[in-house]
Length: 222
Image (cartoon, rainbow, N blue to C red; front, side):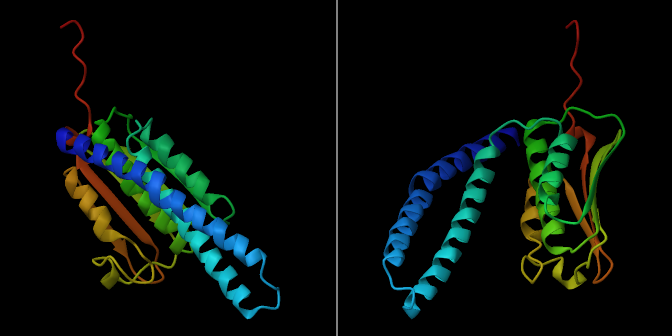
């Protein structure tokens, strides 16, 4: 599992570098050229408004592309404490929104396998992104439970919820990305469950056995 993870991280880093050096920079150059052309157009030209709207959409696409590249590149960087990483993500997403966000930790924190921790963080972050962007919730919380037998992570919101028929699909108005999250969970031997219905909020639980999640205790004196 570790070998597969390290190989995949190397591939992601290479892809991110190529995207940054070619596609994103080339797109930025084209935007500047089109913007220069628009600046020379008459304000009364009906094509000018259409081009400005198109430029806005391309800028938004470029921003999304940069976020994805950053997502790929940061996956190679070692994560610190998992609850702290979740808390930082939630606080960043909360800015500008009238939402209460809480991070809850139960049990004694344990050191996690780096490749498992990275995937757990990515799944939890995707769940938080969905909750902040689509749930229209007043309260969002993430709970990390360090158990003796397993590690559990729960993300809950009191938002609008989602039709149960959507939870097994990677499409629909809420864009939950369930299929991708389940694929990540499967790669590390974890289980991902969803509970939701329209108007009743959503809860996501991620569970992985202690044997897979926790680093073995160090053997002092040997």
